[in-house]
Image 1 (cartoon, one colour):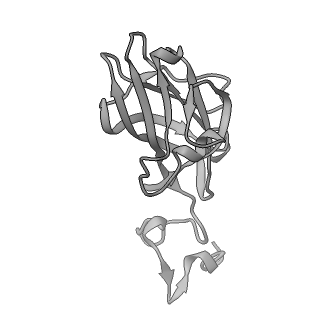
Image 2 (cartoon, one colour):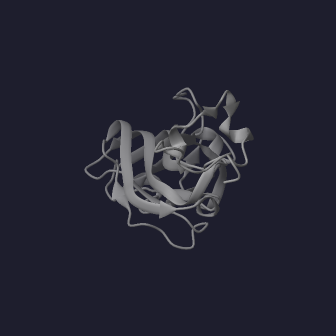
Length: 189
């Protein structure tokens, strides 16, 4: 299995939270190194309860069909109030969403795992993430400072894609010094 990290690269169809340090909103949360000056904020005094922020993501190649098995949403958050911010994911440009789940922490790095998946590169190209402000009471506040997603997948086989003499193709890096990416067949196979 391989992993890749993807970051927000665009605002989705809905961006309702009352404050963002940047416009477009994704620029406030997509940094590699945490920057507390950049963030999005939802709060009760501003009427943000259950308001949504949606984001699109970068993508990458080298994924086999139906080989994405898990995504882990990592979010640096800060929250005041009895209820935590929520997160949901979509594989169809926001047309439908997974059930929203609470952040795993009120303040700090939240880790939300969506496992048991079977998605492809085409699905990843339509991946979106949304945050939901759960701020029903006076004084409630939720901030997102940083967001990224770790994608677990099976790498696409390049070059000679067959087992050879009992050795799985995935474990064969080269044959007689020739990289497998440069081998179309061995002995006519």
